[in-house]
Amino acid sequence: MYHSADDDTMAGFRHEAVLYRDGIGGLLDAVLPFVAEGLEAGEPVMVAEPPEAIAALEVALGADSSRVTFVDMSTLGRNPARIIPEWLRFVDRFGGRGPVRGVGELAWP
Figure 1 (cartoon, rainbow, N blue to C red):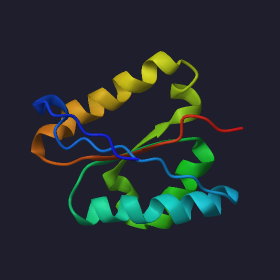
Figure 2 (figure 1 turned 120 degrees about the vertical axis):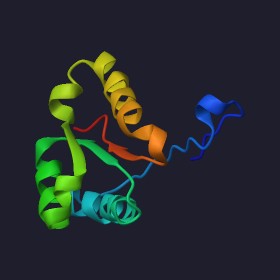
Figure 3 (figure 1 turned 180 degrees about the vertical axis):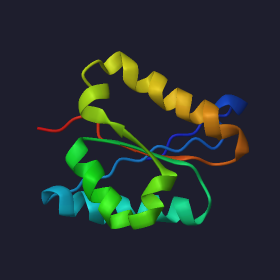
């Protein structure tokens, strides 16, 4: 899915949905290439996932995990009104320097 707006506030905004199966392994297969590509390009990356997904991504990324902003979605998502402000803070902190990347899992069983 791709969204873009004509005004400057949303210029270049892109939003995609990725569906995966098979638990953490499926998540890693779906998300790791996107995160690694962003890090390789020098882009700030934020990942908002439950703790077990964060732990798996940290292991898979190795030393590069220190370059990712991880947010515990099991805490943040308890109050959905806090999710968008968290993303806005991330974008405000890094967005003026070029592209940023983010991964967020808003709902899970």
